[in-house]
Figure 1: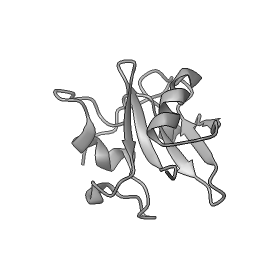
Figure 2: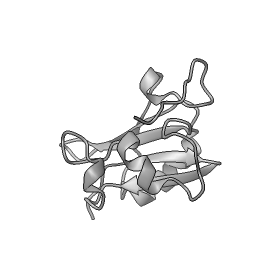
Figure 3: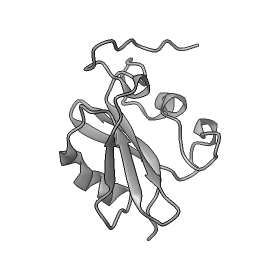
Amino acid sequence: MKPVKGVFWIVEGRLLAIPFDHAHPHSLAKSGDTYVHKKIWGYVRPKGCKKPYNYYPRGRIEIKNNGSAVVYMNPNIGEGYIKDIMEIYRLSEYPRVKYDYSRHYKCYLDAGWKAERRR
């Protein structure tokens, strides 16, 4: 099976993975071929969770034209999650891992993090 793109969070030490499957059309990126963390959070967050989408460490899987995968993720996520990510997103080869230190991927564990308010 082909590898798939998607987004994920680490919530209370557990991987919350959302492979892209067109099931949440209201949460699409401009490209139309993956989800946006902020848009999909309200539909996938754990029951009873009141935290904003950017509270927990998060990341995304991108699939390049040549079929290789790149995982972009918050630096607080350990590579120990990669095995599960590979299984869920159907990655046959170990992906390139890029820790994203930008403001975009900050979470409550990072200095300078601020909860993003709903509009």
